[in-house]
Image (cartoon, rainbow, N blue to C red; front, side):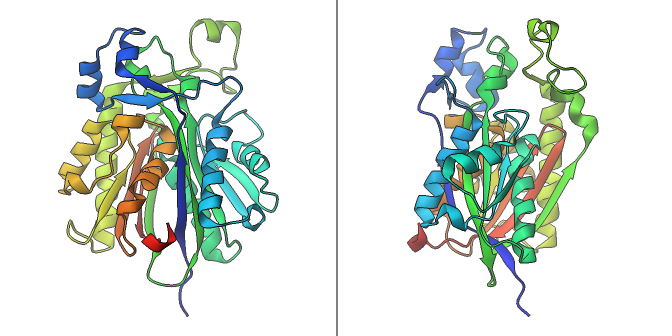
Length: 334
C-alpha cells in the first residue's frame, strides 16, 4: 500500500509596508548601522505600526494570498494551525481569529508557541493530521508582530526583530514528494537565557512590571548564539545522515533567520555551500515564527519539483528542529 505523505502545495507571505532601517535605529538607541550589519546581517526590518492591527492581520493577509494563489475555497480548509509568540490575545487563539477574518468555517484551529521553531512544530503537527487521513487541507501559518514585545530602548534586541509571516497549504501526496522526515527537540533549562519576564501566570501584569519594562523580549546573546549553532548543526546532521543526503543531493537549506553569523556558521559546519542557503534576514530581520515561511515564499521560484530541502530552526525555550521534505510544487503550479 502506498504511504500517504503530506506535501506543501502552496505558499504565500506578507510583510507590512513600513520599513525600519538601521539609520532610523541609530536615532533611537546607542548603535550604528555598521555595528548592526556586522553583528546581525540586518539592514532593515518591517514594522506593523497601524493602530489596532495584530498578528492575526499578518496571518490573514498571508492566508488570503495563499487561498487565491492555490484557487482554494475557504470552506475546503479543515485545519488551521498558527505558530506565534505574539498572539492577538491570551485567548482565543490567533488561529481562530484568522479563520474568522478569512471566512474559514469548517476547520478546527489552534496556536503553537515554540518561539522561532514554532513554524516547524506547527508544520509537523499538521502533517500528522494529513498523514492519518483525518484531514485533507491544512493551512499552517507562521507569523509574529515582534514590534509589540520589543523594547526600542534596548539596543541588544530592538535591532534584531521585525514583523511578518507566511502560510503554507498542506495536502496528501502519495508519490515521492512531501515531508519525509523530521526531528524536533526542546530543553526548558534554556528559558533563562531567552524569555519574557512578566505577563504570564507566574508574574501577571502589574504597574510594577510595566514600570520595570518586563513585558519585552529578554535575551542573553552569548549563550543563545552558542546553543543555536550547536543545536541546529546537530539536528540538521541527524536528518542528513538518516536520509543518506550530502551536499550534492541536498539542494537547499532554509534556516530560521536569527543572525547571519549563526546561519553562516551552521552552513560551514555541515559543509554546505552558502549559495544554496536561503537568506533574507538583511531585509526582514528576525520575524520569529514567520521567518521560514517568508523564505519559502521568496525562494519558491528557485525551488524545482523534487528538490531535497531541509528547514531548520532554533528558538526560545529552548526549542529546535529540522524538517526534510521533497519539494512538491511544479513551476506550472505557481
